[in-house]
Image (cartoon, rainbow, N blue to C red):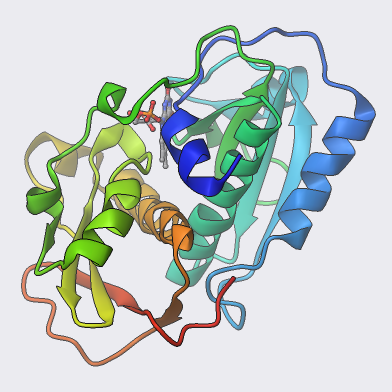
Length: 249
Ligand SMILES: Cc1cc2nc3c(=O)[nH]c(=O)nc-3n(C[C@H](O)[C@H](O)[C@H](O)COP(=O)(O)O)c2cc1C
């Protein structure tokens, strides 16, 4: 299946067949993660482990944990770039697992109990054989309208942003804004207010991963990620995507 179809098909799966997957499949998952190029190769180091249900529940706490046979556990060096990279690579892996017929769910609600290797725990992704349906069409996704999250787009940019719009985000907040110009899109992270600010630190950390996740959906097209000197106003500037002569993917 091509990436666009996988983006439409993917949704968070919260019910799993608890039968462990074959070791070969788990090895494949680890290979897929290792072979996926990060968004920012020179910075934001991160690592991962693939663990089973019991190890995950013993080593994490928190609400909204989901019972699944397996989890990818990401840890990073604590920098914003590590969170961006984890979101980006994690989501490309999620889409590849969708292609294998596996369900996934990002789990920001789980936190480490002095976990897994050290305290650089970032986030986990549950995965396994789904006991729920995938998404059948894009209208099933609850998302903000395109003109709420982007401005200045032409038809070609619109057709890319329609897939970016479907990116998953923590509590479905969709904390992104895209300012389009000819041949480029400037990416911003919106500020969280209201009830969300009560959850402040953890939600802000997750929203850095949300940005990486949205950028993963831009790979329906070819782009180059760079950073410029851009006025971000009330938002946080997250980088610029250059199209046309980009050489990513
Ligand atoms: C960074 C991140 C953290 C998330 N944390 C949780 C979580 O702890 N528990 C949960 O059930 N879903 C979690 N989700 C799933 C979102 O609620 C879900 O992606 C969003 O509501 C959009 O729905 P969809 O994934 O079905 O398209 C998380 C998603 C992201 C991207």
